[in-house]
Image (tube, rainbow, N blue to C red; front, side, top):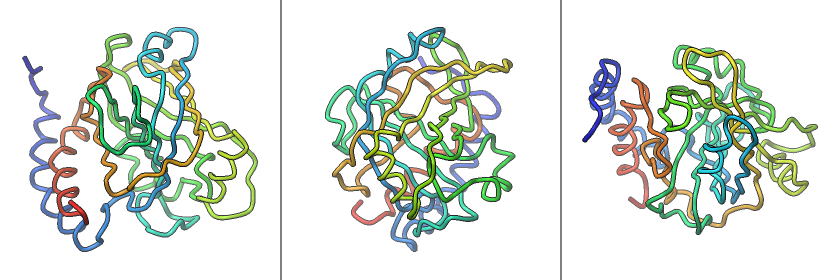
Length: 245
């Protein structure tokens, strides 16, 4: 049985249906994703944290694919940009763009909540992927912690010369490219560490064939709320309009 949709999720479904044609047109005209058109994808390992989040961390432990990207521009501009990190938690075959039944996708951006969208490009340090916090924007339901919000916090490392992609490559080479995944329970203030995601090596795969979805829920982390509800129609329309579909 499917859980009944709340009012916000019903409104999100309607908003997604109405927005889908515009995203499809934008994807076709851009010949790429409307948002996050260019990215770098890495194989990663996920190590669970000790403490309250350990059980959830152990369900996510293992291999992962991590895609880092700018949201608005095809070029890695160091200003007025929103950055994103998409994570696919996998049991095996980390370098394949083809999803497995137990895969779990979580999508993050330098947007704390939906109403901060307008200010996010001004507040993001777009020169380096490892100098911003990333948020999943809307809540998820988990078996262990109930309804939560997720955050990715990178290990702050000193900046080196080069563009944003070059700096990330350097951090991976130095074994310094890692993110701590944390969860905050709804109506609570503190964050609980879940796992550390360590980028290991560049994933050699077709970026256009890699398609993330917050509704890929193989590890029982289920998206909730308005923003998540509008995504299925928008994502499907955009993906069908992209090259190679």
